Length: 251
Image (cartoon, rainbow, N blue to C red; front, side):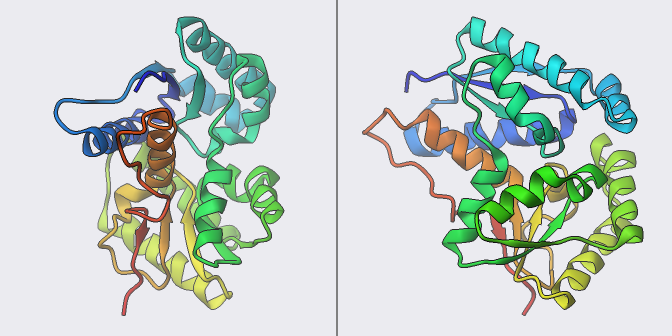
């Protein structure tokens, strides 16, 4: 394994830690022994970027993250992974400013959905992910229709992410809230629900009962990173997008 992957993280550090661990676990499982992933990480201070999100300054976010990505390129990274769903709102700008290809999380997710024959998809994430066009429209390019919670549900999920999950805290109330939103999306005709925020898996781990199959974007992203890292190593199998990313629905 000679490839070097750059990771833009810190949004939040909780989700970045989860993604870092899963990528290293995947490489270790594939290669054995003491092998781990070759990663360069730029972990940003999330507070000013979160303020920029709230203020609608997506151009400023793109500039900051693009410059961070360019720094990773200069340090030796050959591709980027963005350890956040929401910041994919400016993924194209980041990729252009950094001068590196980006392993795009929405495309990774869409591939997994397509492999499972899912066409009607529920989406949970931050208010930005659920309301801005970047996520849903990109899924639609892959032939999928997207459903999100109603206004009060979107606000409740958004608040739980920023006030609780981004701090590494999980309450039973938040798990119940998310389970209820999955039920509403099932009633709206969704076949599966994308956990379109890298912290949501903290509240809805794979063994959590749910009305629909749950696709964990963090696990899917980690698996894609491992496949990229090991693509030039013919000695080792690489994980597929089907393994370990989906929680079974309740019987």
